[in-house]
Image (cartoon, rainbow, N blue to C red; front, side, top):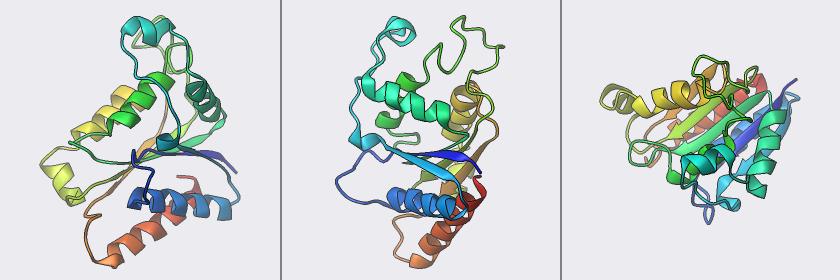
Length: 193
């Protein structure tokens, strides 16, 4: 059984979005599968944005980020759920990972791009929701933001494998695709994938 951390990255915590339902479905499946589940809702924590490289490399780690780092360090599998905004992750999610994935915690302080990330031994699933069809994001956008996350962010710090679920047409009125995605998340949760 695995220790799973689900990071809910929808910036709007005032109402429920499909991101919340997907995270809940994954958590339900993981619990059914006997896995230990921790959750972190980024809209509910406060942290400042980093303003300089010096701050990122040696500044004080805010308490909420230190707590998040503890959850990440304890996890064997991390699931990140967020909506696609302007072709990428929302600023809240980017700001969180800039704070959390600091040198000394996520990668070597020497900054050698060839050194292994300090979070190796963990797997990840990125779940991205979007209004456009998933195939359009892959074909027209080339899924560039997802590629950058897989390689330049999460792969760099050691997550392997980094799998993805691209959930398109979330604004559609037809409930069948939504139900299918919720079932898929439950299944992935049971398998810790």
